[in-house]
Image 1 (spheres, rainbow, N blue to C red):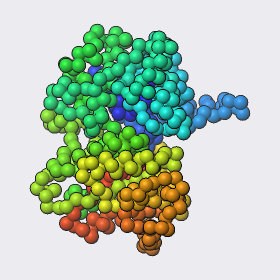
Image 2: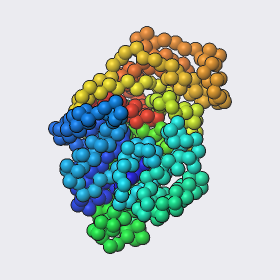
Image 3: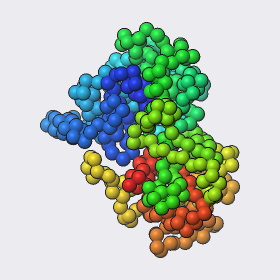
Length: 477
């Protein structure tokens, strides 16, 4: 199978695993450990197996590498490693999430997949895929294979026209999966938070149903029978797990001192469209009595979500005793346009009455030493010019000023009074702070909470999956 979104992959893998199949999932990217990309029956591949397969592949490539045919690039190597792992482990079904685009993606070497799917398209990876939704859709449609059924979800007209055109050229039967009706879940909830997940869940049902049919396991098309799903499908949807998307994690250090005083809301959104979704989720999650748990697990007396889900319960009584303050912890790759991302986030949060007291900007400085170990995040001298640019955009934004190209880069002195915090190395102004490293920012948040025991700090971490992974590593120690 070929996919373009991690949430759809997570639902698909969970459904087929709950149907009793031996599943292999290759997903991108990882947050903490590269082994997260290779999942067998819903679990990261163990270190021993991973190392054995890694060196088997690496040694053979190295033996045959020449100037004309060099070693494969990083993602291509990982994709080839995934094929080796799934073949050796004899999985019943391999689920592949593409890296970028589709047409030239390393996963697209599969000549005859059983079924392909394309999730919601947006303005992402534009430096590679194109500047319009039509161009992006054309790249994504590269996973279509002649005669192989394909599914997508409701798309903007510009994107849908291109998908339909590409499908017609290859004699591909392209169907649109309508968003899932929550009533078919028998009172349970999707394992992944957010209203948009009902779109991803419907696509997963279509893909699973088609795979089951085309491989001779069932005769019923569950996509056509959406008023009644089998228990295995419902359980799969309810227990799907995906780290770094709509995930709520209390800070382990502060939690041991005072429960619920510092909570991180993590979502790896990094496109304008996903910023809207992230902001809505965060705004709803921080209000009132919030409980993140799995209904199926609760109803059956145990937690089936595994280590990637954190249970968070904040009662009305506890919440009423303390005021809440919201912070934004943000970074994004320099190839993305923060002038598109940050305004979308601010506007969507403001529409729900949520305003950030401060935005904190940090660099991603993770260093991976070896498989199975935690990453080391060093407080070294780093170039903060990009983070300072993000801060200038933010200050203009919250002050209601128009943000335009050169003005953003050159107007710092006209309105900011930048001060150096010698103790922490931070650069501060009225509505934001730039920190030289993530650990320094986390320590500042912890100190802020300790100084104000009458309040709770809720921190939205977004803009980069790499940043989300760094935060998870630090706050779950």
